[in-house]
Length: 304
Image (cartoon, rainbow, N blue to C red; front, side):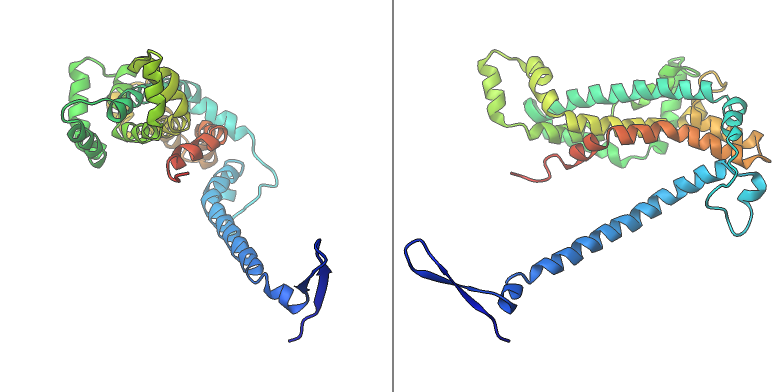
């Protein structure tokens, strides 16, 4: 295979030979391969996104169909005459206002509690020196391997002895601290350069001022990620609220959806509408905090 040679005059009067044609094409052999790899990655991500989002889309579609259309074959993937009244029916029949209010209160208490306790525990494990520090941290991590169902009877007896059944305190108290939160924020605090702590000591900062003015602002992505995880877990609770509450005054939205299903057996579209209403706060939360969530999960993953 031949190639053309072009001589270009240099600043010193000399010349430099530049190859064109086939050699210029061979000089960039990996560009096309990189493009194909990038296209393959985007194609894979698109397929995975469709797999994840398709059940959500079908839920929304079924909430806008008539009951007989939901069971029809072939299934309907786009409602031509959407039944928007199903959302108002679900709101009224399922008493969604009360259940959403209860879930919002309990979820806020749990989220704030987990963030505060995780900040304190994570800071202590990252910056303080005390006896059995490593052992206590291992004990914290060991709690992650114990399913909640193992301790649910003990927690229920404790709440009963404290007279906290049918109360917001009973719904939230067992979840105000988590080993995962302590681990996540400890890792975030360990990324803070030690020089900052030394400089803060020279400025007269104690542990409390250093934590509130330096450590916590630098760990905001991890704190936001913990807040999102805590919110999702608390909002989706079903078993614990079912056991500790007996009337609708304190029951949460997940129990409300179960009761809506039992009272609307012939109107399954209304149940789907209730599911959409209950999931809407989660969707808004994930969209609003997606950047903080990614930053919090990847913080410290790459050194540089």
